[in-house]
Image (tube, rainbow, N blue to C red; front, side, top):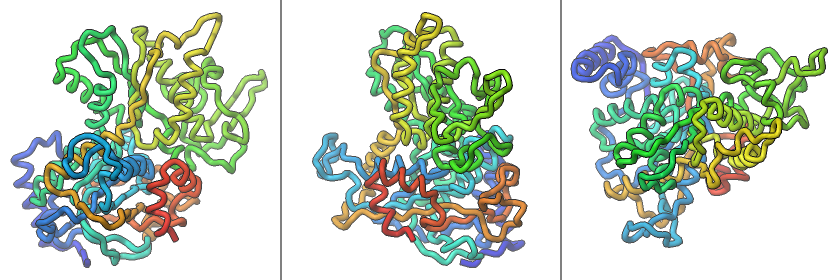
Length: 500
C-alpha cells in the first residue's frame, strides 16, 4: 500500500500523542514510542500505519505470530509445533498423541538485521530497541511484506496474527508492556505473551518449593540487555511473594556476553575463516573487567583451541597476549564458568538448583552448558574444588519456550481462538535485512548494518532502514540452517520447502 508521509498525517499522529500522553504513565511509554503507536493507529500515510479496522471479527483461522531478534526464537516456534500437553477435545492436561496446535498456521519474524537486541541498552539507546519491538508486533498484525530489499513499497500479502508470542527475552523485558498497551488501543482483541513470565513460573514449578527448604540459588543466564533490565529478578521476587515462599533464594545474574551473537554467526563475534585475533572483534577478550576472559580461569574454561575455535596470540613470556572466542561452544563455556565464578565471588555459598536460559539462542548449546557444569563440579585447583558446593546434586536448566507454548495454548483455547483445522500445519517465515536504499557507509563489507549505524539510529522517524522479507538461503547463514535442521527438525521441515 502507498504510504507517503503527509502534513495531515502528522496532525493526526500529533493529536493522538497529545491525548494519549495526558492519560498514560510516561515511564512506561516513552514519548517517541507513543508517536509510533499514534502513527500505527491514526496516520494513514505513515509507514507504521496498520488498518486495524479491517481486522476480522472471527480470528481463530488467523495465524499465530511469533517474533525474535534472530533465529533463536525458532526454539520457541518448535515447542509450539511439537506441543502435546493437552487433550484436544476437553482441553484438560494430558497427552493424547495429537499435537495441540495441529493444523494451525504460524507467521515467524526474525529481526536479524537489528540484532542483537541485548546491546541497545548498553549503547544508551533502549528507546530505539522499544521502537523495534513495536515494529515487530506491527509487522505481525499487518497484511503485507517486502518481496525483497529493493522494493520501495511492500507488494507481498500475508495474513494478520491472532496472537503475538514475543520469543525474545530482551524484547519481552523492554517491550511487552508497550505492545500490550498498543494492543489495548487497537480494539482487535489480539493478545501478547512473553517468555519471561512463563520462564519464571516454570522455574518455581520445576523446583516444587514447599516453603521450608534450605537456602539455595537460581542462576539467570541472559543477554546484557535482559540482565540490565532486571526483568527476571523482579519477576522471580514477585512470583515468590505471590506464592508465599520465604526461603532464602539468591539470584545470580550473568550477562551472556556475545553468546546469542555467536549462535547467529555474527561476524563481529565469530568468523571461522580467521586464524588470528582481529581488531574488529566485539566479544570477550583477555582482561580483568566484568565480561573479560580471566587468565587465572583458563583451566576452568577448558576452551576448545582446535580448528581456530579460539584466536590466540602468544606473549614473549609464554602466556597469551590476546585471546578471542571464535565459536558458539566456547561462548557457552565462557558464560557458564562466569556465572559460577560470579556466584563463588559473592561468598553466599548457596548451591544453584536451577539455571534459567534467558535467551532463546542458548538452548541450541544446552549440551555444552551441561558438559561445562559437569566439568566444574569436578574441577580441582590447589587441592580444592572451588565450584562443587555451589552446584546442587540435581540441577535443572529451564528453557522458557515450552512453558510459553503452554501459555499460548491456554490463552487461545480460553478465547475460543484455536483453529481446529484438519489441514496441515503451515509456517511462513520472514527475516529483516538492510534496505537497499542505505548508503554504503551504513553497511559492513558483509552487507550488514555497521555497529555505529545500528545502535545510533533515532526514534520516531519514517526511515525504513531494514525490511522484512521471506526466509531464503541467501539471507540465512548456512551454519544456522544446518543447526536448525539438526536440532529443530519439525520447524525445518515446515520452512525448508519455501527456501529458494
